[in-house]
Image (cartoon, rainbow, N blue to C red; front, side, top):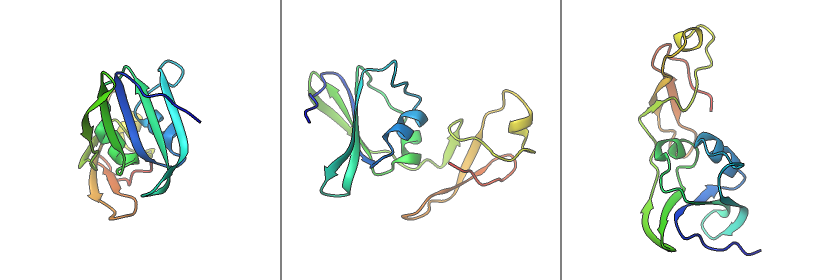
Length: 142
């Protein structure tokens, strides 16, 4: 299989295998309206297998949202066919409007227009991080 290089855009590399579509969802990227290439379950020396997302014409990605889903991913910014910057997402301490509170009694589910605010309680080490709602202290499910 051959996927050509992009001239201007971003490459999200080292995405956990099988999660590329979930990454696109959390980054609010519509595959039907965006020129992109998904490479799924590619060989990786470091992880065994990985996904790669190449997006033509895009030069920005929400690193906080990416840090929630794929902390080990790298984002390469490509201009003129050359990688000009490499970014690494970090686990955010505060999350705004990326995940939603599941508590039916939370003010964010009963009132409109209130931001979904979460704070990091436990980075999870190598496991899943734990976030809690700023309003009701409910653990986030994502």
